[in-house]
Length: 604
Image (cartoon, rainbow, N blue to C red; front, side, top):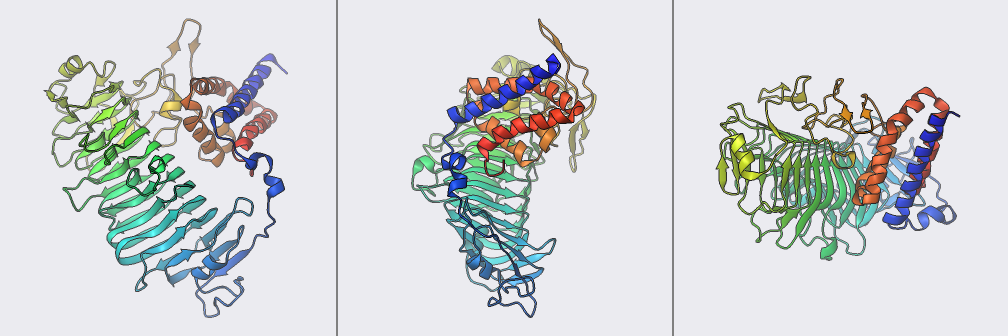
């Protein structure tokens, strides 16, 4: 084997060894899952059942395809671990309580529509607060339903999860006409102090035409952790779109009373507009949550785009990363963070805002602009684009906010020009960009320039970069994938060339930039340069698992960050060899699976 191949394979094995070592050093022991799962595995025979609306359907039937059950509730009273029920097309007038639970050993219980059938769960005329209610259940999948007409409710939901549980998936459901007060789409309340709701997946759902005020359309509250809220569409609701909450007393143990350690990715939220209190509904809101990544979302036509806050006195929202989001045409502000009335409220600290694109926000011209900072500590705002509306307000920063704020490598723009801006920093209003730079000491490497978007029509903008955009290769040259992520708003490579772009979109054309050091000149080509993505795909479970481990474990320590750096240094060479040698690709896959098996042994 050539020396280069040996070096590359050595690099792969080093990363796997270092990753496995990190699991043992930095992650809580995976208990008997790793060592004794097979010995302790129960013997469950998986079964498939059916529900239908036809004349022969009956809950006294055996639930076979030819003799289906009549109600979904029958399935939710009967299924055992490892079993699946397929519900065939039709309207089911019922509200459902899930009384069964899967197990780690026996497998998931799956409640799903049949093939591509439209299955409607309709609550018209039926009592009860929730259309689908789940409490203290685990290893459960609910997928493919239309859930509607839960009307006249006070604190009710389309789908509600309470108590504790693990490995619950809500996918591809459509929820609408949930009406009343606090009439919400999907709600998750971790109320158990001894056990969280964890490993929760809420993916691909649509929530609209609901009355969540004064609550939220999709919310995680209390003792909820290790979650993925991804690819959902929330729109036309009368308060907050998506919310991650802490400090409200949902969990009796205050140390666990916060949504935490999760991701909010790839969601689209629009027309989330509050009908009370002057209208301050955010499309995406973190209120007292912590350790959450908010990335690759699109938020528009809401009262507020993305807000990181903490309403409860004495609480802190911390370790939030907001990156690679499009935020535009929102009524009052684009992105905001901080305690709005500290010390009467909580505060925000140690949060990062990277590579977001804010365009034409504060459409109501109330003077908040693209970015508003209230009471916060030790936060970073880098690589963003802020393009103001016609009132030229770029940023408003409260008089008490500036403890440890760092703004740099941002691109700012108003169509009126650099001498007609409005930035309010600690009570001083700056009307020229030059005066702002000299007066605050912030944004030392930032620029004022037209970012060159594909389309700047306010009604329907296209915020992708063009080839001549000054945002291309304008971000912090020290940006690291562990902080800014590996993918941009579209799921393309986050860093193309040798320097990250400003804003949420990474221009994917050929970059002519190079980075020269004392020892070498480095050039980088476009395309997939990550072995895991090359093998499994950028949106695969395996790639997400690697990313989650990178972002929540390795990036937290100096040793872990060094492992990340080495991995990305080796990746282009590994991918190139994989493209040229299929056998080598299989060898790389085998060693990556060693690491994956430590995290998810039942699959690998």
